[in-house]
Length: 290
Image 1 (cartoon, one colour):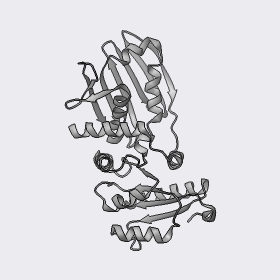
Image 2 (cartoon, rainbow, N blue to C red; image 1 turned 135 degrees about the vertical axis):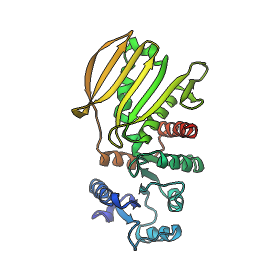
Image 3 (cartoon, rainbow, N blue to C red; image 1 turned 30 degrees about the vertical axis):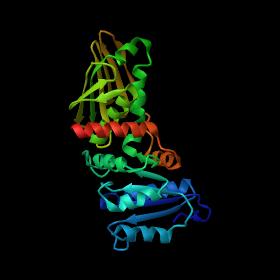
Image 4 (spheres, rainbow, N blue to C red; image 1 turned 45 degrees about the horizontal axis):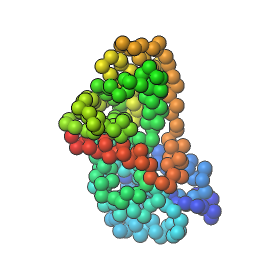
């Protein structure tokens, strides 16, 4: 437990069911405990001291943490809805933190999260690092259309292509765009704006480092918008606008936030994030058509 446990205002339960990630999880827990006085309990599922049965695990947590103190669960495991331990523990937590592209880079963990979310009360506060990491890219996309000359292109987009090293980031970006622009998923790889017959095609390409977006391509009838990681500097993004409307290419910094800070922000956010939940809902509908 944290050295400051006697003045703790929250309890952090870290559950790890992937031996490759136990060191990563312990380090994140240590850094969080240094920043905030808290009870910290790290549970390594591979240890014989950690119960494998849901009810026994619940009892072990209750025995080691004080009652009446809000709890946050950092779930470092590939399954949620299909893991009875998570299903039992989740309702007891004020906030749930997970990373649907940490343990694996396909869409399996995201599909499981969608299934869990469909069965849980609306006030369950879930935060997914796979979504939280996208904030710098969301800002870059929004910046394209802050210029008056390109506003009409935003409402004339015909094709979206997301290139990333794992699937969750691609689905989350599409879910975010669709939820903000009132697009409805139609047949496979197609959106349709509400009150419009126009179609927007989308594609998710797998390339680059896991948990990182490599490229976003947005195409209207006349204009092409590209935000892409610079090859020699992954902390910078090249921004290009070409076609009927052009803008000189430029390079912008990618304002990534370190994982511990993302976890800290999420841990301290008690209310559900409606934009994230809407993005997750759309991502789930896209996955159902994939």
